[in-house]
Length: 431
Ligand SMILES: O=P(O)(O)OC[C@H]1O[C@@](CO)(OP(=O)(O)O)[C@@H](O)[C@@H]1O
Image (tube, rainbow, N blue to C red; front, side, top):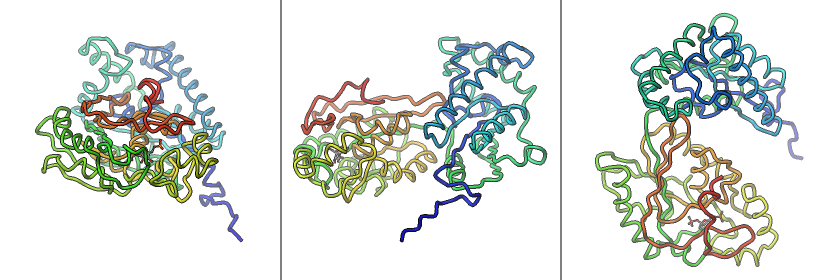
């Protein structure tokens, strides 16, 4: 008889029911938005507010900030009710009152609160953050960078008047929190109580805000790509080999000469062969976790063969491609879970080039571009194209470098079995 006892976190709450609101705390220019990369409710309401808006003595500013916080919060509650598990509330939340308000509101809804405070008194780091990040913020779009930096310094002064760090010994000592000093040089964690909270803390401790980019490429066209077969461990096609020879030049164009990269491939021949001409001073690492989605019994088949042999599976996969698990294989959801160590390592690392597979790149791309993972299985990630992603505080910048070497399209539309089709236009594919 299977064990039907629900899993609990030791406090009688089913683990599956755990919902966490991550509440950012800290003065502006401490990297909070970089960490959270979420929440622009206040920005919707006051698209380009001046420093006055943040003046705590300005009653109208305070009213609008409060209204924006409430709107953001209400929206987040709606999202939790629809099944969301982790929400991020990105604001300064710099007073005890505001934190108590969030804490009480969440308690009422059965949502756990994890405060994440980013403390930084290092003037150099603060100024670097203002220059690098804030002048590219939507608040300052189209404004003179010097004026923007000045306005921002004034904005911080308003917050400094009321800012209170989380009180470790007094009436906030019961909160669950993570306090980061000077961008992670010291970290205090308090009352981390369950599995999900510990995963979030682990993730946050891996984040850094040093500038870096991640380059993504599929392997060169493979013999299986040519014949429309999925999975397998095929060699590169002649055009795939051409791409491998061209990749060092594409990378040099994008990265420059003096910036060594670390290269990650899967353990499959087609990715290793694609990376083989990259400079010798690039460290190369093979990850099993980067291997292509396991198609189980369908490995090595064409889509037409799958449709003939497993018609119901073929339809079921198109109906819910994210959750459909191949017989004896994997679903996209499984892939996202197995990519967790890759994502953690990516967050800890600086410049990395990843040469991997269509399904894997869809998941990694969706992670960085904040796309809905459940839609990622339908994205078009073309062959013979290098993608550069640069995470910033307000989103991720993307550049693409085409190798100009023809390749088949492996993108397949819903219901179709065709192996080469025109992909849907870029604008529609990635959300
Ligand atoms: O999830 P779908 O859209 O079927 O795409 C995944 C497929 O992409 C392919 C190509 O069709 O990746 P890859 O080029 O790495 O071989 C298949 O091996 C893999 O099964």
